[in-house]
Amino acid sequence: MEHLDIILPGLLVLIAFLLKLLIDEIVDITSTIQALIELPVDVIFLALTFSVAFTLTNVENQLQGLFYGFLGFVISIIVILLWKKTKKLFLIGNKWWIFLVLLNLSITGLTVVKAVNLVISCEM
Image 1 (spheres, rainbow, N blue to C red):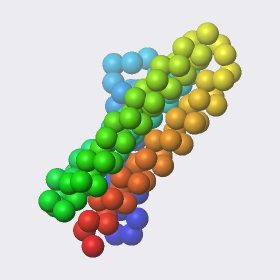
Image 2 (image 1 turned 180 degrees about the vertical axis):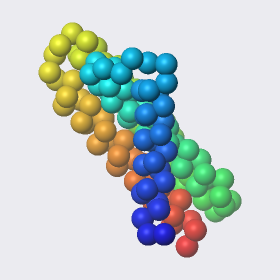
Image 3 (image 1 turned 60 degrees about the vertical axis):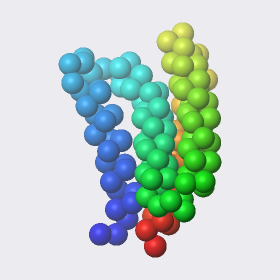
């Protein structure tokens, strides 16, 4: 199937997002926004999982995989700091939370695309 490399990771993130949002929760605007604010954390750990898979796939990938794993770990710290700051800004009503959540989603989106490309490149 075409574009499975995009569809499957996106589906995993969507399922995790919906399960966290819907199971044993009252769904309202506030809880939905808070789940959206937390979404980059899920995406960054998906990217780290792909980096680990790349590292373990082939002995020749280990050095590059460990580099990207370390880089992913550093990025995950930044993503978590942005998530915490975004949540605080949202709760006090500061509109900067919108910019920070978009920034965080952009960072994690680029990271997961790179991680998926790593895994795909080792299969060729």
